[in-house]
Image 1 (cartoon, rainbow, N blue to C red):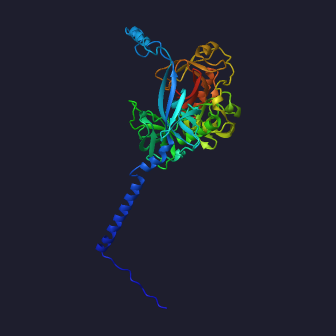
Image 2 (cartoon, rainbow, N blue to C red):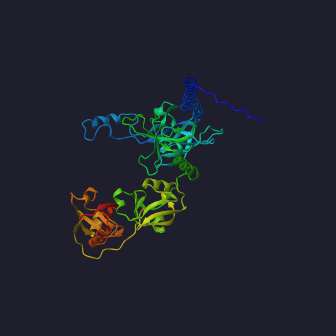
Image 3 (cartoon, one colour):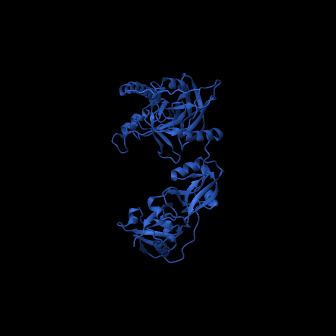
Length: 487
């Protein structure tokens, strides 16, 4: 059997160009098609699909009438008597009156559970739900959580309701398309579209995890859903940042992964049940890294106080730096608070702390935040020597006496050194230390005398450290301060 060689054809430059240009045109056309698919020409199909699950909420509240013109004219004004007479002549007089408010929400189950913001229904005597079809039903409050501003309502109906599901807000990326729906400014059902502008925003609460969006959100949108392009709820529209009360493209939606946990608890218990560790904590500052043995970054949360509670029972101490909670690294105070709050009450968790330059693992059984009592800090020994004043590191210090405790509002068992003066040119003044502050620890060791502080300073200098970690109490609240050691 013979074989035959097949010659590879040779093409001229002109022939190659003739083949390459059409191929490139096809590729460009394909790329444009993919871009067009990523940016839909219309959101109409999505809006039509999910609109029936979005509701308008009208609340009604009875408020007491006013008997004086407060808020109309200031007290002492020459017009005060005129406005009082005018008000007294009104038909209502000081009789109670009914006020109304508007908001939004969305149905999460066919049997009538509705999610909205707590501030939409807080204090309401009557709650009416208007559906996309125009039907109206009264609602009752199942539970509410002021910490995340979420409330769960329920309507009774003999037919299944259209509803939507929660999506995974952690998968939402900056730049993703989102759609907001609700009842802005009482105008009725309305749709707006934008993108995810930022993630992980915090406004004022300990459990905040907001998605920022430029989709138009106005008053009345509160409690409405923020959808991804799959029609899943990734956020609950809660707040706007605005100098004039209208949308300027900075809106905030509570992330669905936070909302879902709250809703599940409200549905089961009628209230939230968050985990409680029982510590007071602060972030680790850059200046603390050098002052703490074994610490090489600002990651973690430093314990400033351990009242009676789960942490104390487990052996956690003030000065410990929490590095890991239940197998997850702790980046900062906010991250730890969220992890603890999301943990199950009564759960045993492993906590890794840095103590005396070494890591230790402790097992803590979490309590419940809502029933926790922050009182009951440990009671140290009393100092036994006579008070004396001395200047160290720009501070004038003296041991704490019984009279000082009473004057400064300190607990009866508090022991330490009182700051009676601060050199305004010192590093201590720059760090915010002021007369009346109480130093209770240095290098995570108790302070009873000025000599104790001098010893800690000497030890730090011998170890080659540039700063000393102080535990400072002001008005009963503890915080750590890393103070440069002055020769």
